[in-house]
Image (cartoon, rainbow, N blue to C red; front, side, top):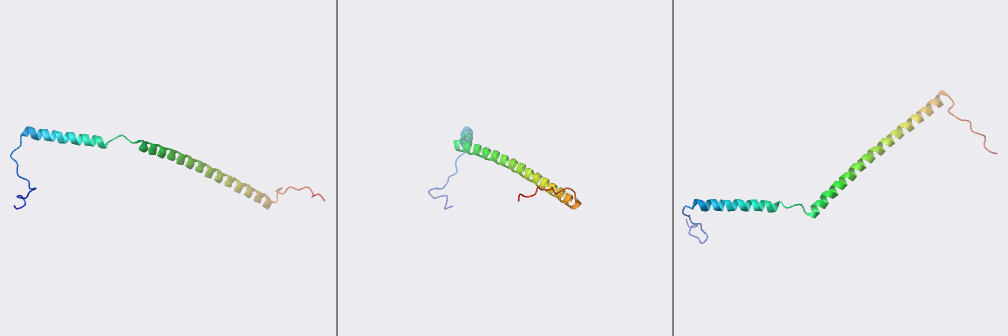
Length: 108
């Protein structure tokens, strides 16, 4: 009870007028709506720049990935072609076919 007698103690109020309660509640709701509207500002110029930069980077990465896949496919395909040609050459050598071409004699 000693706390209630202090300089910053709250005292019990008599019944409030219902109109005043509605008015205060309406003011509070208006304040909340305005506060929410203030917090939802449109994106800044920097935010727009960052988002466009992210889009550009994403497009470049996508293009890079596609080109890397194409290069890897071409390299793999070239490697297989080279291996097949090497195997054919070894096959001809082992069979004794005409794999060797006779070269002209060297100039003396």
